[in-house]
Image (cartoon, rainbow over all chains, first blue to last red; front, side, top):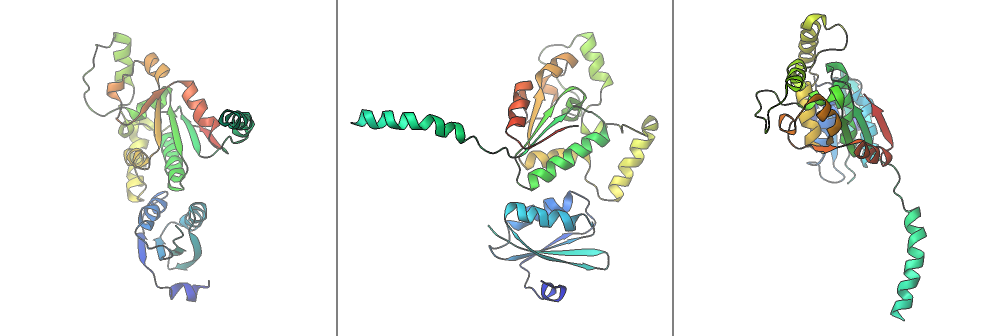
Length: 84
Length: 181
């Protein structure tokens, strides 16, 4: 999905992990995903660039679909679709 | 007839069982070091692995045991001898009191590092320990080092197992990643 498509997604849950360092955003994503409906969309907002690697890898490992990342003004918005 | 069926199943069961050894999965770690920076690395990796749904076992031995010590006074079931008391006094009492392995500078470097960690929102070690436990990371304290250093069960945090090298090898053999920190 391109940046425009990602921005227009209907997001079921936003995880605000701004200002949190590794492994914080990953832990917050893991905690939050249980509150997202199956096939629902979760957006993780992080100020830590490592999160753009960590969250997609985590998603793949545990069975969520990684949709893409939008970089914007020092923040990264990572979009996922909950798998199970 | 029933007996024959059972015999057949029995003959087939053995080779199949042998083949069905589960694929190694998860992370096992020896936490040998009792310094702040090394403990941080160990716990960040453990928490990351647990977040990625890997089963994690951390085996604490030697200086690493100090990370699991409780902060504050402990009543012992039986009194410690003088060597045990000395060890107990000289070693850090828990995750909050560890020093950096480098640039400690009599505690100055450690204090600076902790300040920077707070400013940059890096989780502190006690929080990482607690989060690891909440995520189901298994802690095993090495009973041989405990005995050697005079560390008693009652001075360690709750929710941990106690074991020897066999316990680590068992965890390592069934995990795919194994680290020594």
